[in-house]
Image (cartoon, rainbow, N blue to C red; front, side):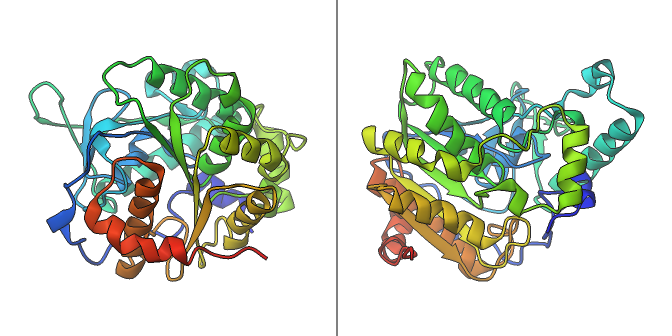
Length: 348
């Protein structure tokens, strides 16, 4: 169960440990062409720089070039974009939103800890896009009164980010959408409720990593009660991602969109069975192209940071999936990943 303290301090940093070894970088840059655009949907309390955990370099929404030294190549950061959820606010306008004193203190504390984590654990560095000189990582505050946890406010943010992306002529046409943690059910809900209404439909594949099927199953009754009291964007009456599975499956089948579910057996934030329930429900509802890959040794946040075998499996599985979906991929990893798709977790 998640305590309220874990929400205030860090959802994204529950299992923080230093990564122990670098990936084999010899094959990391050989992406096939044409390139794919990635739309990344982050987890709770994390801003758009969270996408830098998945690639060696990307651009923040405020323009800084964000680089990391972990060596991960889950997607091509040169063509990636991310969205910020309602609770992520600019420090300059944070006070103007009039959060309560406790909310303001908690939001500042959480943002400070996250900023420390970005610098020391994930080792992110920011650079000026004009001259390449080092600069500060983007700063933000967290307004707990606006947390939505995959509900309407989050879906609306993602919908706007998608519209902005499809209007950008510099980005490749094919879009890969990846949702992590709270981002996974947000992406699922967006596809089930909003995507069909879009005039431009360019999403070609979905990766749902460590997503919950029902938020009340991941939080204690006290935490849920406090969240309902604090946030105007959260409702206990909102439909759970699990209830949206029929619409989601219909949409994916109609537009031939494959889906990869990823979950970790030692996840204490979003238990493994939560993601498995989404996968099982989707398959039972008739999802034509769906796989699930299980990681044995890691938890919620450290899949790409600590355990070398799980990092390798993560890379191999997603690139094999990209190849299946007709997207840009790294051949070295795609070849190794076929076995993991073939052994995709069987639903019961």
